[in-house]
Image (cartoon, rainbow, N blue to C red; front, side, top):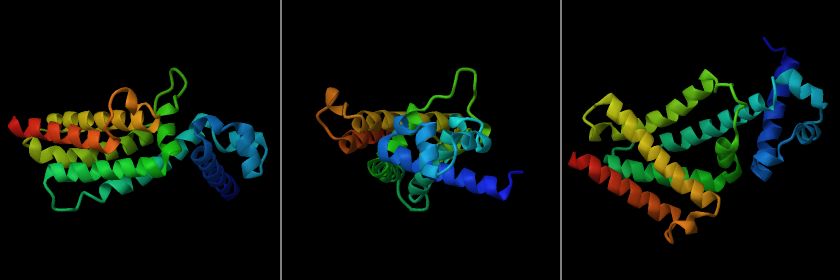
Length: 196
């Protein structure tokens, strides 16, 4: 169990790393920059975390938690699936607009070869997918495998549209906005599910 001072250092390092990423993106996070911001020695980072990858995953965990809170706000509303998905997409896009570097860092960061994503991290991702799975459930007649598949198709499609927008490459594929493309994608996908 970490000592209180080590726990405090871990939290301070996560706070500072989060601020560095939010200000300049994942590429701006280095051990030296982080140590200077946190007011500690570079070696202290590696006493608190296995390596920078573990620290980055801790920052990502906060980002995923905040994203989950934003998306979960639609769960309790009594709306049709299409309306819920459109509202969820709006919250997703709004989150990206408010947190562009933190969101992009989720997809830019790669663990070293041979290193698996920790189970706790995968659980956070699965919790996000579950939000979409619950929304599409009425459209797939309670078929768990279909619900999982459709949720991931929708998630990946929205992710792709948003990634093009966030990296200023959307104009290479469309003159429409991220919101317009997301609405069209969701409307088309739901219409297809409703016809089945």
